[in-house]
Image (cartoon, rainbow, N blue to C red; front, side):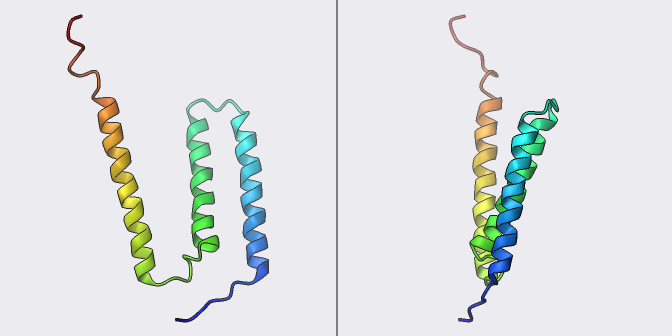
Length: 99
């Protein structure tokens, strides 16, 4: 198994990017963007998540099997979220008996 050595400069750059994205998230939270507040916050969160997974969890230089396992995890997360949203959206369809 080969080991890929990541320079400290790369880690420092990723850390600076993560900290700046955190500051941007805080600034966006205090702005009134209407519906776009949630979209902006989630977009920044996804960018930070991708950076952490790629660099700090060393996925960028991992084998294809590791990429497959991570992808399967995200597919499973999507399934859980979709089933939860299905339950949440359909709660009022049958009505409440006795009213």
